[in-house]
Length: 276
Length: 335
Image (cartoon, chains in turn brown, orange):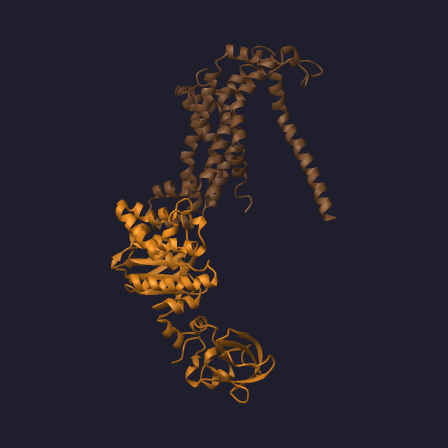
């Protein structure tokens, strides 16, 4: 009997999981579908699910009107750049917190995370003013720097969790074997933490790619990434849902594909250390 | 060369003093075992010598040179860890080569030493495997190989055998002893297992709560333990202790008698008791006797393997007169 109940439960949970997953995915699916509709079909009432005339027109128009590649390139530079910079800073930071913790290490970790709870808009003006004063507004460098700072707490936290899983004795062995701090991090710690570092990088690229507050408020033209590309289709031309959807689809496609292929790595990374 | 001197060395973690100031000299080529119950500070002491922990006070000298503030890598010591601490992402060859690579040794010399160590440790066929593909004993050998190639002034072993099963442990014990005879290098070995200490050591250092209770050769410690703690810790099974009237007869607060120093008779003897559990090892039998007079909880006695007595039988025990250890109220040995 116990077995039957388990199967029933399994079925119930699976169904619930599927429903939730579909609910979460639905807006994305709807956006993609809408991008293939004509503007008239896009606002049809009742909404058309699949029975509409499929067209690629929106994509051509979007590509004609704005330079998708430039936005894409900016997004790539900003996401990869801020992640690389963040990792460079976070690896030594997480190393020291994991292996030579002080009395305040826990507090520092919590404090770092608490900065993520601050509403970003609270520091929008100071940061904007600083960037205007220094002439860095609408530059990729500024955006890379800001996004590094925004995501650094998460990178440090994730790496700290991974590093904690690495037995300290191995690092001590390296020290006994004559490794300097640099060799210890480079030849022993980093190779052992590769899975963790990889999923941190992946997640952070996704976070940076999707970041829409700072990328919209600190850029105008030169440094504008894909978030700005989408936004440019939302307001000035009224409600052109199909074109907006096409722009959105083009903006999320690269990261969606990347996420799809690195699914395993991401899931492993995010649950790392949770089960042991 | 590997003469290590600890001068007034102490260690505190925050407000907790784990090792009060102590002095100790380890001579070149000696096999010294630090032994004591868990939490006695033996591993901490080893880590102080290794440089993995900083001393809170005192001085550590290696071959006369002050090494107190010298980095672990520069002390010329090699360490073998309890968990082996191999680099899981490197092959056996690279693991063994790591210290030489860090020292910038030339490749030909590295290869020569790796080959020699692998031959000595039966690892030649495994050089291209990863540590994860090796058995516990092989991993331990790799860890030892990694230590050997550096040709250190002294080897430090931190409970290296406690992760191995009993049979393997015995084999590795012999191998390490053999290695010591061959290399004639100072070795410091930490264990909580007094059998390892007795069988391997030239000199045993018994520690309790960070304090050195006694330093001496295995037989010195066995024959003349300086206090009750050492008497109870060294020797297996444990020494039997008697207090009160029995002890008073010998002018002591406590007397101790080892299981192997009691003679057994079915008809007459000093103490009468009934046979409890008997542990048969084949060559020997350890019997736990419940004494009639309530002198101690149970008395352990070693008899020959052929001796038979059933549970509940009456039995008489007589201590060998020369083998009674006497201790005063402070637990110190009375000469």
